[in-house]
Amino acid sequence: MQAGDARAHAYIAFIGIYFLIDREMAKIPQDIIDRIIDTADIVEVISEDLGSFGLGNPGGLRKKGTNYTAICPFHDDHNAGNFMVRPKGVSKSPNTYKCFVCEKKGGVVQWLIDYRHMSYIDAIRYLGKKYGIETDNIPVDYVPPPPRQLPPPLPTLIIPRNIMEARENTGGDVLCNYIRQLPWDACQRKRVEQVLRDYHVGHAAVRQETRDHRKVEHHFTVFWQVDANGQVRTGHYMKYKTDGHRIKEKYLYPTDWFHALLERNGITSIYDPEKQEQRQCLFGEHLMKAYPAAPVCLVESEKTAVLMAIAYGNHPMQVWMACCGASNLTRDRLAPLIAERRRIIFYPDRDGIDLWRQKVEQLHYDRAVIDTTPVQKWWRPEDGPKADIADVVLRLITSKPLTNIDDVAREMPHVKPLINNLDLEVTTDE
Image (cartoon, rainbow, N blue to C red; front, side, top):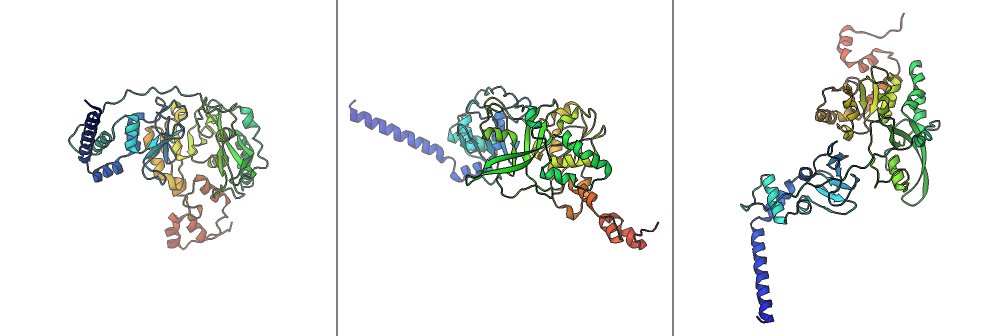
């Protein structure tokens, strides 16, 4: 065969393959493909392959804020924060995945191509079958890959206690001074300094670079996380105003974490992300040993746990802890309490009641209860729509005495009909 004939035969063969592929793709109209991609849920699909994060599966998907993270399956990864899955409904790049190290990224179809080694058309057919959208009658040509061997989990980052202890002087701390000046009764006032010490509340000044490259000193209240074994896991750095409210407006680092500071400054002698993994614990978890049988009163924020410990005390009948966010209401985070069969009383913020109920149901723990009385029965409009138990209690502590019947009716609306019927009035007569 001459060279020209060979080229002609090769060209004809190429054209034949092209039309075969084109005919194959034409079996699924584009509007059906678009519908399948819009319907598919990337969290569901990736969970089929990686599973959910748990004690037996450190590489699985775990919720972190509005997104999900996992150990990246495309390279030898040890840090679960490298691989992110953005679910449907988020504002930025919904229904996608991305690894910030190896830079694998894409949507649900690309995941099937990258992870399961499917062809594009088989990925579309697979998703169509999964979500009940008819494509064509050609079977999916797919054999699942063998399960990926996950690397062993890295050791937990443990911070030397002397680092925490060096930051426990709160004499000039804005939040601590606000707490000190509240109108506590005599018994509560005696507890203030002891509670601040018990929870290892600290203060830190950190020089950080602004976006315009200026060095600025930032002052933080530090809530140290110390686990049930007395090991320091990390510190939550937060800024407060003199009225006790957090600084939340757009400000450079209104909140930070000690382990993040170490990583940004390259202090690998304490924290090397390639050799250790940062795992948070409950704020106040170390108090389990001091109160070995006490039910745990669990709130969301660290400040709330501190205020409630001052207001009502830690004792054999209760100990106050904080989860530092609803996303941490998981069996993994609560494992030390569950292992001891502790009774857990959850006190949600007013705007988080439904979410906390859902989270508690997912725990499947029979010694967990939710108490919404403070943010429903005791709540008043001046407490705010996002009030937590401490907001309500502080209002009760700082409010003026009831001096007239209108005050009574406002504070106790359930007795207002009785007041009206009996024409009652408040008197200071002996």
